[in-house]
Length: 123
Image (tube, rainbow, N blue to C red; front, side):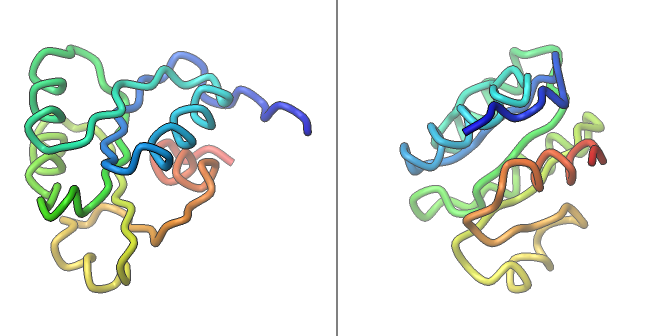
């Protein structure tokens, strides 16, 4: 297996995901693309705390349902800061879209390259 090309060196991406294995796999894949991973964090409060104390976040990947807690408020804060973000979900993405504020929403599993493309428009 070859290492993915580092397509986004130096970018800082917040990962909000409550499933340890999904979060770990995603973090490793993002790092392989040269991305500095913030988190992963597993709930809304941790995500909001990290956003409040971190000056630079270039993008975010947000799991919609964090053990029954919806993550949309995190998206709202990121939007006010001008930070691009995407939602991921184990549910039907079209049912989430009306709450997503126009952010892309993907059904899991999602290839990390697709998330990077959605955040930064890289191909």
